[in-house]
Length: 116
Ligand code: 5GP
Ligand code: ZN
Image (tube, rainbow, N blue to C red):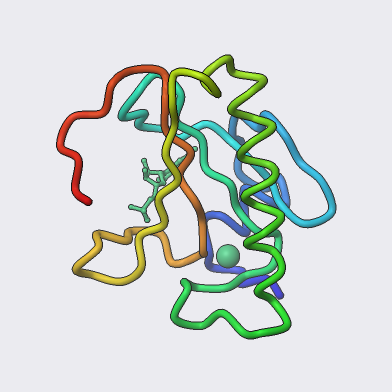
């Protein structure tokens, strides 16, 4: 459930500080330390799942919850109409650097470099 060596597990357990903007029984959301756009937060399941590669059927409902949390946070940030993006990087070719599943919520400015 928790990895004592995991950065995001330490943020979730408040061992390491972060700018937490929302939390509930399933997820913790905090501002990215290196924002790429004006609104850049990380939606992180409390459960330690390294990436989508390790997601089980039983754990998968958290993804729907993340989508709903993202929708509410986008509305609260005033970017629901201007547009926003969810990204999860899985593995080396995608550039994943923290091995605890997380979804980037990005918005607040036009995003260049549309990949898909
Ligand atoms: P990834 O590259 O794995 O998709 O995303 C990891 C994200 O975590 C990066 O955008 C990076 O800026 C962010 N990050 C790394 N270390 C910390 C930290 O200690 N605190 C916060 N708030 N974000 C971090
Ligand atoms: Zn973790």
